[in-house]
Image 1 (cartoon, rainbow, N blue to C red):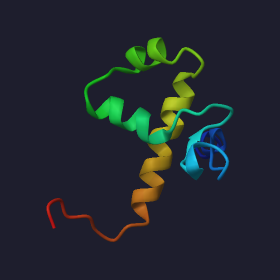
Image 2: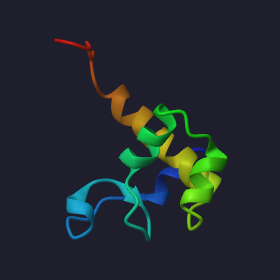
Image 3: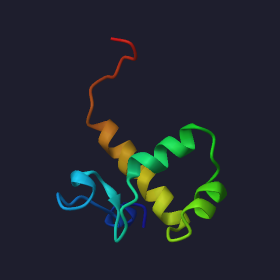
Image 4: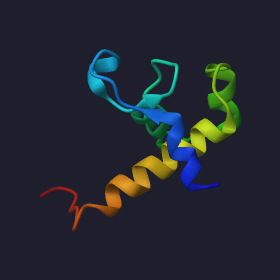
Length: 78
């Protein structure tokens, strides 16, 4: 089931310049992650974007985790 979440993320050069978005929307994974980083709760995000679901938020987190797993290291400030 977890891997199936990634099916909710799509990249299309015609939508948001090819950035990963929640399928069928123009809401980018980056926006969701940024909101979470600024302290928004899942409920806050769902109120602001009522056209998405909790699974869309989980899919965004999983996408980011999988993408970062491909990186060897990331050092802030260098």
